[in-house]
Image (cartoon, rainbow, N blue to C red; front, top):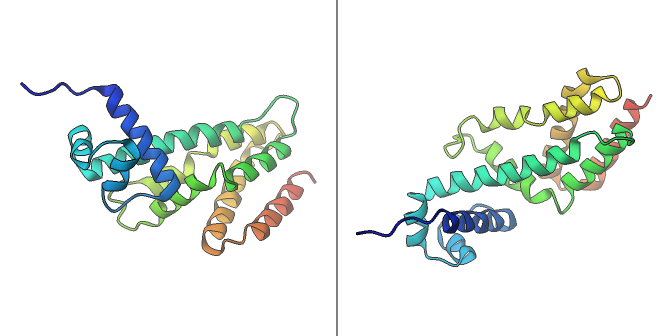
Amino acid sequence: MGRHKQPEIRDRILDACVDEALAHGLPDRLEPFAAASGTSPRMLIYHFGTRDQLLRETLGRARRRQRDLFGELLSPRPGEPYVSTLRRAWQDMTGPTGRPYLSMFGRLREDAEQHLWPGFRREATTDWLKPLEDGMRSIGRPELGTLVLAVIRGLIMDIEATEDVSRADQAFEDFLATLTR
């Protein structure tokens, strides 16, 4: 009789794999995930079935973390002008807190085959729209949510391509100034 799978062990392993992937990117082999989770490649396959399934679940859990973090950052706060909220969100999203997510999902967005997450580009384009519309509603301009999203996404892609964070930061500040006119 075989062992019964233990979901709490699987969950702990998955969290360790997400932490590893955010710190170092998705690995080509299972060994980095095995070392990070304190197990063996064989046990990773036991718990997740295949390497690709482990990678998919790692991406899914990382995306949930990112949605929670960025969703909170982009949500309007009582008594705070939404432009200030956007400024702080931008700093956190492009700083040490958010950069691991941007790096991981930027690479995934660029993957032409998208075999690990079919439809990711579409999902990644629209998943921040609601909090941005809600925030822009707080200044009477919910229709600008798409514009704010496009500016954020474009500047993030610029940072990924050039690593010129100070230029992108200045461009975002210039954009924020147009929202208060």
